Amino acid sequence: PKAMALCCRRTGPPTRWLSRALSTVVFDRDTKRVHRDRAALSGEYETFSYLREEVTARLLERLDDVHHSYTFKDVIDLGSGSGHARRALSGRGLGIETLLEIDESAEMLRLSEAEQAGRAESDFEVSRLHMSEELPDLAPGSADLLCTSMALHWINDLPGTLKTARRALRPNGLFLGAFLGGETLAEMRSSFVLADLERRGGVTQHMSPLVSVADAGALLQAAGFALPTVDTEIVRVGFPDAWTLWHHLRWMGESNSTVQRSRSDLDTLLAAAAIHGEIYADEDGAIPASFQVIYMIGWAPHESQQRPLQRGSGQVSLKELGLDFAPPEAPAPGPL
Image (cartoon, rainbow, N blue to C red):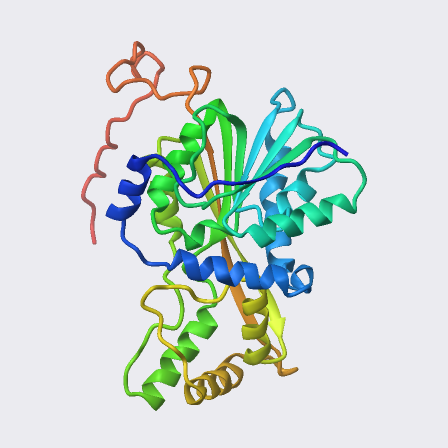
């Protein structure tokens, strides 16, 4: 098999740490790393990684819409997990020669390496880098394709991370991203609100804040991507009860890691589970869990890309085209 390397690098230029210090800290990145390490060491991660595997496959299906003349020699997978993008890219061609998997969880990278070792020889070289997905130290112009799936919703400095991704792309390079949006687990959010009001008389934070679709488009533009595209879909999964849902979230590595999170006591959990089942259960007693997935596409600027002309630069009058935009004449007044 092709050579593989597992490197460790947790530092970066001082300017990156300054940017992180100035950003609003919403998520505890150390706690999230522990969550993901725990999930990888459970021995059952592949059983609970179905959502991430499906979202990654749907994200990379967008490569089918890219013209066949494009090739992506060097690929970066930011927040790679156990190698979801690697599996989705295998056999696609696309001219891929190297894939760099980056994840803050060393255990996830080891899981990916062990999983690949049990497969047939890969059609591209894979290397791995243990580094935070937030403001990663990536060489400018080092990739033709940068993808990230189900990682950006735990990032504090999302504008900075997107700018870093854009700088890492070569001209006309492609960025593909997928993450959970603000309508995710709306059923569970409302259940916790009602449970808190009933048991505590007020609302506390049990779930993390998430980005809206409108914000995603603005973030792509602010990062300097050309031809930005954003779309969304709702993925619904059924569970027997709220306790099973919470168990799956834990072993997905998706437990709440906000800095201001509140510890949920048993009384509140019992109330939330009962409310969830009472309000949202279907005729078979199963409860739905809705995951809003936001997909982002952006290109590194290149002179070959289409651009709008400057305002006032038109050389042809609309009158010359025979188009008359004069308002229609008002009808003559008639009898009522």
